[in-house]
Amino acid sequence: MLNTECIQLDSSRALHVIEIESITEDITKLLDEYFVSICEGDSDSEICLVKKRLAKFLETKNEETQMGAVAEFFIHLYLNQLSFKQEFLFLNLEENSIKKGFDGLFSKNSETFLVESKSGTILTKNISHRNKLHTAYTDLKNYVSGKSEKGKNNPWRNAYNHASHLDVCAEKGIRKKIAKLRDMYDMGEYTDIKDYKIIPCSTIFLNSVWDSAENLKILTTHEFLKSYDCVSLDAICISKKSLELFKEYLGE
Image 1 (cartoon, rainbow, N blue to C red):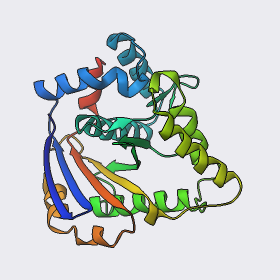
Image 2: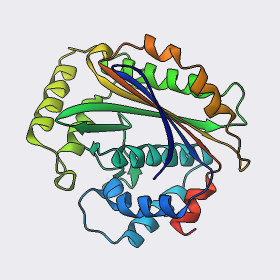
Image 3: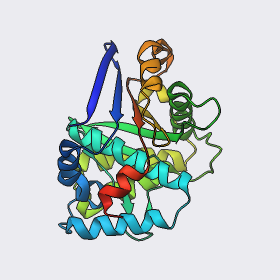
Image 4: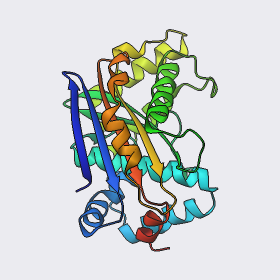
């Protein structure tokens, strides 16, 4: 299990703060349990082959992209641990890339949750979990309202394509809900973040020197999360010792 402290901020908002100082035996077991399903869904692939595939993807990318991918992976791992259902494939089978659009769309009890993950290194000026969470929340807000500066691609179309993949095993009701939002977006009928259950996430890589300062800071300065418009919010903050921890697990 991941080392987590969870604070219930109010009836609809929670903060999850996670420390990953090393890949312990328990974390290795958790990774082994969910690795294939996170990457490929119900593909029945051998874990050794999927690990090689992800390692190959990472080695072709710069450090910033690697950090983003690894940060997302551990967010997905944590949500799987909490029995959320992943309605997408981490790896795009046709592109050998991580998915585009929302960083994740999960479900629980037939309700959908939108995930956006932001990450960076502790060496970056003014980096903090608060700033990363704000950027993640703003990106989700702009995605659903059609105001994203990252382009005019329909994020719901990509979400629908993933949810419709055979190995994702999404419920028909989930697919119908996403399809309706996809079609509305195409017609210029956008929605508001206040109508969604959201999971903004922040991951800070600590340049191989363990320090819990950023996690301690967000645990005492989290009141700003109550100002975020949404149906419900689960903010996830992870401090991770280094990028190399995951690479070592992959066998590099």
